[in-house]
Image (cartoon, rainbow, N blue to C red; front, side, top):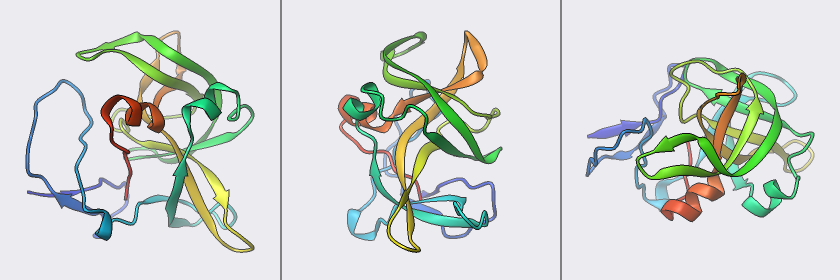
Length: 176
């Protein structure tokens, strides 16, 4: 079965790979192994200066120790959701263990809350920061993937850090 990364825009270039195995779990996220030699991870976003839609390459991801030591404090974070498209918000807090959600695997670890808008259908959306690559170049650095709302404050959203997923599952989630 061919798999494509969903996009809120019509885009024929979001082919990810071929699904070979399905394992049922009560989560709304799928991880699909792809060949690194054909993979060029990109995120559909708005250009930081021109505000037109573009795909920017994923250059890196934020590490747990950077986030837990306050490196995201005061930084603008962006999310590309299937329903809401590109939205901007602010980092609120880092949680080593997040006890508001209990999954079939236990509690979530390495979670952040962000003051950002999202709607049903945006689950799994990447959050990221922009990175300048020189006089005219831009890329993104992944932060995490959207889980849902923060129950004490529904205006805040919960994201699991990419590095937390790497630590737990041994994989790096990317998007095209």
